[in-house]
Image (cartoon, rainbow, N blue to C red; front, side):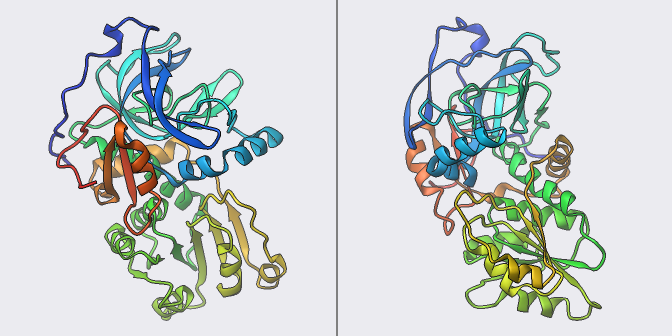
Length: 378
């Protein structure tokens, strides 16, 4: 599908034309659980890395969790050998839903994408000691700054004409594709999506692309229910007025012995216990929500109902590629997800506003200025 050419603001000259290593750039920095927009050393691309000027970066719920619970995540990762290796007391630049402009390459790179081209990427940074996550590592600053680093093996060129904001949201869309793939819905299963933020919407789109129907979605926010229907849900309900499993049973009433395939896309304590209590026997619950708080579970209840719980995971490159193809082909439209935009100077206010699910699906931080036009009101 041909996209209209995006209107892009004039940008300063590429960093490769400037004096390398002499810049102090600006970023929204997390330190000791507090955010500030401040100066930050210019990142330098090491082996296998690219240096980019950040054009747009989405505010993900994971970023919000990281600000609130960074100490807990860092301690857990250290104890368990996880990939979130960062020091919460040192400066951290978050942001992993990105689109940027290639400025320069580090050593041991193939330079297959020309300088000046736009790219998007998975959040993974392979390195000699294993893997890091962009925006979750002190050494690999994310997209809430003017410049950032990406792994050449993970970047993908943005198709001509694709708006920059759309390209930045390929990453959360790829998470939806990942959960659809990992769930591998069976012929006797019917989906119920709990929570219609960006991950829930991406999952609905991926289920629709895979032909898995009917899709029931549940969210208390009216604008998110509307977006769920646009993404491909057959029914979007308010759980305060309609119990989700009652609606699921009604829409699947003509099927013989359907099993509920429930996708938990909320990530707050208490949701799993509610699902254990309300789900039909032999349901399968896939936990896509990223819960960073302790959540005591009454497992005996789930055990007695033969409920199967499947936890998390991360997108693979093939999920990212599938998401990017779906955007380029016009099979999925993520532009309605963009409910706000802000320059770096307004990043603190934008980050706070992004935490209101009744107003926002995705807030974009645009450190280089206007990425696309028209701009939604902020």
